[in-house]
Length: 423
Ligand code: EPU
Image (cartoon, rainbow, N blue to C red; front, side):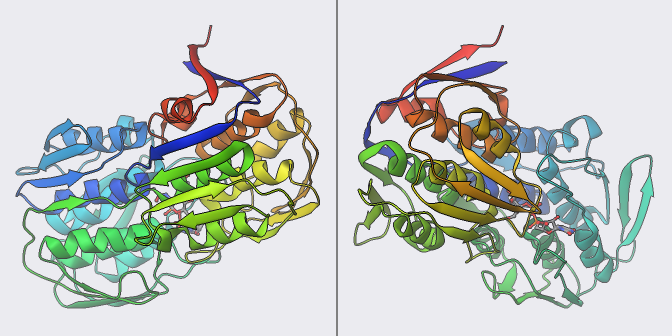
């Protein structure tokens, strides 16, 4: 197991490339199960979550090659049982369910277990697939879906108590591509990653309209074919480095970003007093740390609102921003594990019922801290950049799930960080 030692106080400058999106890559890799023809997917980030997904589709029978960010997948013959040992490692494995059901008429996937960021049920996924005609059964910890007579188009409302579901929308959309007739998903997730998946599926021959909005219409087709696709930039990795630049930078440039996808994050960083300048094409931006800073009121919301996946990192930024900030997570109200660790570094944060009240302090101080999930670990790295002393962040495997070479990117920007083996 690795840990990261961050020696606080270095100034970040220079430029880095943002990687392809983890959360777009995962369902796109799974979608390659929908065809027997080869798919070539570019800019797949080299993170452990994409590795898990590749292991799962390989275990299902796919022939997979990976080099320099490009993954080539051929799924000529596949099985319909996703192995528990692999599936249990990552909740996002659930998105093989839609493709397997569509291609094989049956899918056996283990029920996801508990999750540190909060309760994460799959009832909406199942409601959607059931509406398409699948029979849903549970046995030995597995979900067993069968559609002996094939899937049939239907009108489905996927709204849950916490809003739309990203992977639920993906699962139903993937299954509906090969269903008989037209499927309409109301209250669909409109995240850019859902649109990227729809673009991938349409390039395979699917007929999907409205992805990226709350209403998606899918006209089923008989078969899908192979395709080449480049994954969109990771807006959460970009946002994390924007926050790092705002905390400890002196003009940091991020290339390979998408301005449109970063609107809510840019607005939050600018509101706190920092400056973000995009080039004319909107695919590169430079962040300048502000001089007069102020706290912020943030509420996470489905896209185009402020993303829950950037809540922890913004909390770290606001921990040393003068004034009072109020941060509410409406999507995962329990996603505040990072606050306890930030408090050990001297942050003044009170968490109550899904809301954190942060009183900005002048500086944090180093302490041994523990990563608890992907975005919480990113928040600890950010906090450590300007903390007094050397912060040791253990359980770094959490961050390696979703940030490609984070230590190397930070080193390129001038941060003083070391990845070392935990004893
Ligand atoms: N929900 C239900 N029932 C369901 C599905 C979801 O009630 O059947 C609830 C969840 O409990 C949550 C809300 O709906 O309160 C939204 O969850 P969603 O289904 O959208 O989450 P997800 O699709 O499982 C993706 C990302 C997460 C991100 C969320 C929200 C991937 C692989 N994961 O998860 O990313 O936080 O959307 O935007 O795309 C991360 O990258 O760190 C991460 C956790």
